[in-house]
Length: 117
Length: 114
Image (cartoon, rainbow over all chains, first blue to last red; front, side, top):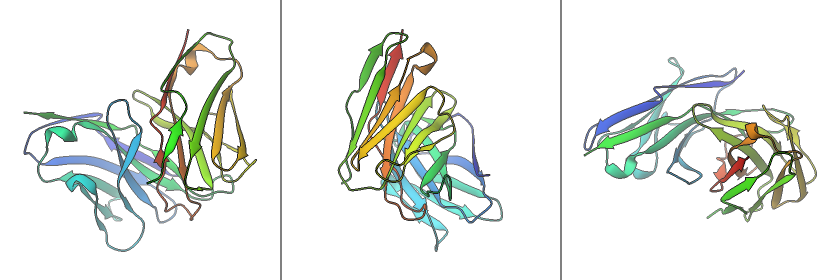
């Protein structure tokens, strides 16, 4: 069965510092992987996704993630944090063939990112 | 841009009431989903639908039902609301493309049951 583990429920960085949010997954089939961001009182917004091809995926707002099959990881990074990056981030893996349908996602429990001035 | 609209941002209901949460998407997506979000638990799937009148239970369907009479609309129903159903409810939709299409989310409905 698929699952997602996000290490660290809270991460705090200084403005301008590297952002690293960790995500490990388990999947019995080649996974599709996603990162979403949630700003206060809003729904989730797609940051980036990995389906096939290049393992380094670039997303919006300067974020990127690298799919490492050998480590079953899909960590999210950004070279230089900005105050506006403060939000909650969710990693997700697709759950194929669930109830006859595809497109379900299993989400991690989220990591709240704080950015200090 | 895909737009997923949830009819209410905030709802306050009493224990035992029947509650309807409505969701509409405007991009002709086949898949629609209802998740609930609770602090420390992430998002958990309640129900989903991959076609009109089709529905499948998710991970936590107990106490909920759904209705999809039209492709663009997916309703979540709490037959008899209880305090443990106080939560943020998120609706989402996606194309039916074998799992690679991202979910598009509404802004959520924060439900309080007193």
